Image (tube, rainbow, N blue to C red; front, side):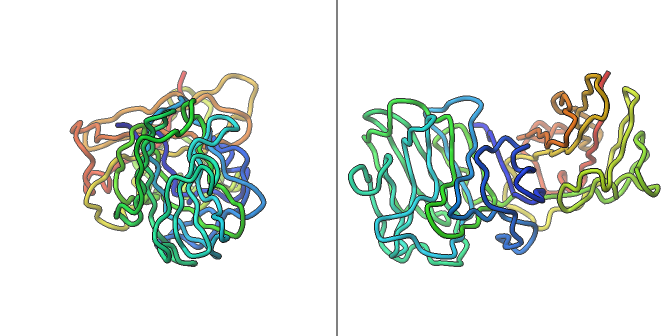
Length: 330
């Protein structure tokens, strides 16, 4: 099982920033209505969906996300989340005006697979939803969990003839907040998750870039959201590198499934420019994947499911002691 995507929506200042993470058909705005009162969520609305295309189509997968709705759905059910292949929906989750959750292949009613008891989802209350989903023309399976409890399931279903290559937060009506979103490539859930965003707090002795103002490099890249050229560090020489101490986790979790690094960068010349993220855990240093920069700011990510210092699951103390940075590649 591998985490293929995760997003706490904390770094986006506008819709354009979301597009640089790979989303398409982006509607809505960042919102201060975060699930635990820290950071941001994404506020969708009735104007359109928030769509994410997968790099590799999957026949089985799980998604988890925190969800809060301003208004209940309509009597026939309104969409929250869809599994799709291109323009064809193969599984869709919705809520209705009673607060019940519904799941269908594509249409609530004629192709509906099941409905929960009413009053499961109340307006303005954060709930954590997970969907284990297997796509098959006759042996499709789904399990839906709310706050860790199984609330709806089905087997032996027609969930479409083509694998999932797109997922979509749908917005048939009303405002909905989304937070702490993950996807894995098997139909096995992680359990209720929280994504904690940690930022640089101090320079280290590894300091090869030049800040655009002042003498502290960490303060140039610790912004709450991407701010373009307002604050940045720059360098041109291959091998130039910055490494920072980062903030501690805001809670001590029972398990840490992965650490994700997110780098916002651009180039300002016509020559090919490449960066990588540097991660130092204890005495072990590793590089993330090579990032080929564009001339506009984009977010670049790496996901590390295990601690490189131990090859075992991350611990809170190891995450809190991490040093993170970036390096210009030859």
